[in-house]
Length: 409
Image (cartoon, rainbow, N blue to C red; front, top):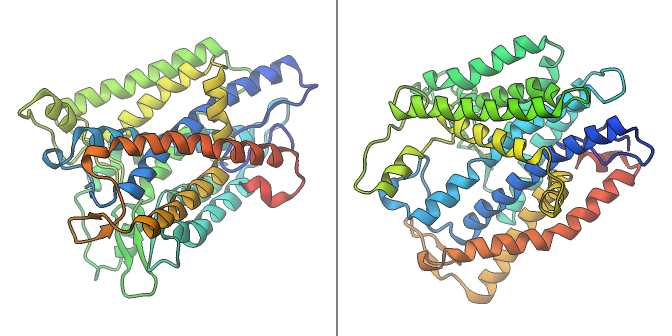
């Protein structure tokens, strides 16, 4: 596989031994993106372990401060960074695919369309199955649907001027909150489109299986457009020191805007914050944002943090970044594998020990109680090491194989 051809939704592979020094340096910068992608996917694992062992304790969106323990709140808050950073890096990776180092630019339309369509197909088939370990009664259009749809949109938009895409991305990310109050009834002719793009809810409720939209797609289209526009920062001829300064400036700008907009409850989050009885509860209320769909404040917090970490990783080449790059270099394989291990591992535990927890709706499950929430963190770290070697093996296999479909993963 050519070193300039990223895999879904990866960005670059290791340089060939004979690569020129400039290309080698470019590949190292690309590896920092893989490392950040792998990091957010490892944090994502924690949220999915929570949904496996702690699902009897339901979490609202945004979270209910008075009823959500701090350990659960901040674990969930950490997971908030995953989807925005991943989608942004997907847009960035698409730009890098279209502008390979040392070669003429090429169209990204086929690359984006095929991979976006594949993600949507996997979401409604294999991934829906792996969430429950059986044929699902309800198909949830979740993050893979949102990424896949965003890639399809970018496939057709990628030929437009980058400035136009930057304006469009900013308009979507900053402006969609102004429409959040609109809730169309089922009888409205635009209900289905509104639900797909901006308002989570049932798409088809009287069918088998039912289909429910969890990730409305429009805000994620804005994020992937911004990622595409940021791609040139990682081109071969972009000065590294300037890139790091720019990433830090972007992170600071996002968090400064968040402090103003959120601090004065001006705009960007439809759940205002207020002073609570304790400093901890006040901090939790301030950091309590809507994820479905992602509010502007949610995206300012998460993308701002992503810029800071990407700047930090830009010059890092150590055991930690190489460990994370392994997951970031084969993201689709890792995603599917971790779902399979979690669902069948849970079924094994349930068969051995039976249900021991009851949720607020009377749902009986096997899980851990509030006093043992630390088990979620321990299992998460154990899963990282359990999945590291098969993911590393697949990443190496993907780089050396000539089988076309393997490179999609």
